[in-house]
Amino acid sequence: MRTVKIGIIGCGGIAKQKHLPSLKEDPRAQLVAFCDIIEERAQWAAKEYGTPDAKVYTDYKQLLADPEIEVVHVLTPNRSHCELTCDALEAGKHVMCEKPMAKTYADAKRMLETAKKTGKKLTIGYQNRFRPDSQYLKGRMPSLGEIYYAKAHAMRRRGVPTWGVFLNEYEQGGGPLIDIGTHALDLTLWEMNNYEPASVMGCAFKKLGKQENQGNILGHWDTEKYTVEDSAMGFITMKNGAVIVLESSWALNILDDRQAKCTLCGVDGGADMNDGLQFNYIVDDKMVITKPDLEANGVDYFGGTLDTPGVLEARQWLDAVINDTDPLVLPEQAIVVTQILEAIYESAATGKAIYFD
Image 1 (tube, one colour):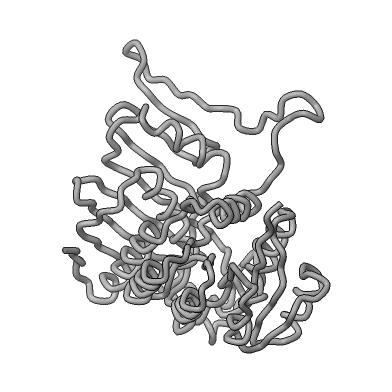
Image 2: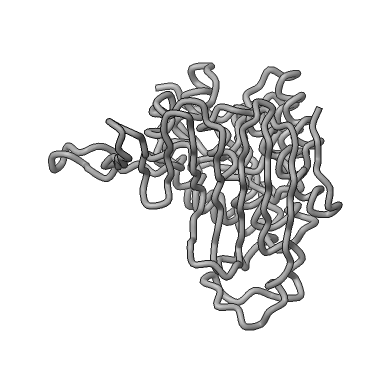
């Protein structure tokens, strides 16, 4: 069995919650190096998930200098995605970079160009594509016909992250739009297979971040450190005339929480993920709704897989590296997500529509 030696740069929340436990499930993954600016975090990760001789660094360039490392996972705040990814690619490593691809479109473009120049693989951590409902919907897309209207949902009533640098606009580039809106937009564009935006109108709101009466499910946030929007919306027109409405919030007085979901309206039918995956069609002059059972496990002890989207993402990524195939999430796709998000922020700041060439 071919194994892959992997170095981890950034041992914080997303490493602990997704990448490290997911990679541990695959015997082909050998986690041989860990880097974090807080040495204790890297030491903990090495002890919990590393090989017996795993190395610990606080300088990522020392990790990249190891010729045995084949793959690097970049799991740091958004601001550093570009620099770390490009340096890793230049060092001859394949790179999995956590979402979003970058803080800015210019940075994402540099990452894509570096991947092409070096010939190394680059993928972005959009694990929601690997969910059972997402995969099933992708297979059924032809039955919906041309998709001309869609909604990308990333809505929380009170779900503001209170750790790390999530509230820091300099480090992250924004709030819920770039954090969870990026997942919803990626999922919607991928299901539509449409990556040609024509224009964007956007708005962003900073209305609730300074409130002390919060009711936040993730704990009380620091109002002084809250420098990002608490909700943002975008109206995206594609070159073929299709329209996507993107809605995102960490804090909004709304009861309809929807995260990393999409609604698709086509010529021949529609689909949404709002009450489980369901499809709507017209059959024999009647309105019909169908809802596939994606929870069924079949016969006891022989019923399907319990793998999480993170595990499936890691497995497919290792498959791509070992078999020299394309990963499911291509950088050419992820860069469009960053391009649109940046345009929504720009439109919100200027009050003007943003047009693409």
